[in-house]
Image (cartoon, rainbow, N blue to C red; front, side, top):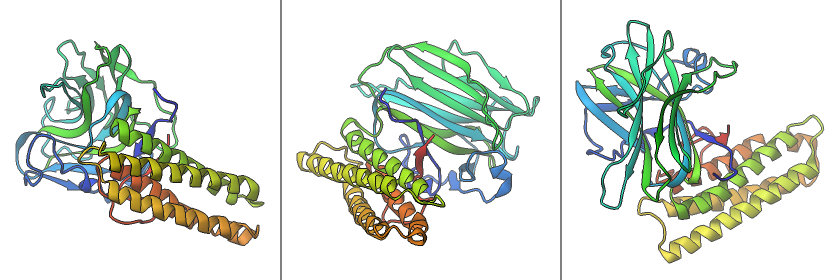
Length: 354
């Protein structure tokens, strides 16, 4: 695994990603993606107030959605699965699912799933994998679970924990299944879905986190890693400029790093476009546009703080959010999700250090 920190995608505006089902027509009317407006009720449960909901408009058996691009190599992925209402949910049957969808060269599906199953008796959720030797792990009274899938050199590790309340430390991960499966060159996608949910039933998904050797594709990730580095440098500059006595030299150095990484990302992506080595779902044009916008805004912020004026330094928080938004939007495009324009965060993805 590389040294980049595990990161999260806030599922804001995820309709641009989720309808691209790996299995069925994206226009199927049986599932509607909607966004919670519960406000503080959600904030008391999740580390961020943003989430996506998969809600059944009719009774149905199964539906999955996921990030368009294929990935390879070792990875760690997790998501929070929860329910607010029991309408449409059947005890020990209805579930929100986190699925590793993986195919070999003959297009055989060799993936596994980790489910959060509705448990009416214990007013909670049960974590269970799709493997034959799995052990059902109940979380009584828990309406939200963090579920996690990790591929190491030798194993697939599936685990779960009760989602911590806002500001509380998380519990240790509880193993759900350990599968002796050495790392291969099989492609994979990470999906979320709902299974055996009746009309009106829903499960909610938030804080989708992924990191790995080649998330989004081997070529795409060489660019994503540079965008990550630029984003980290931008966040570091924000912190230094927000101080009562801004650290102008440190912030300027961080912005130099961000500019260098953004330029390297642009150059690497242009080379990949010319060599036709990107996946067909990769939105290279959108990524290049956003990287160009990021470069221009980095230069503008550097110019603004060159006078070392404290008021101007404190005024750079919003412009730097826009720069970070451009980097994060580029990452979204490199994963196959289209971000047409630059907007303040949150946007299609928010991409921060865990």
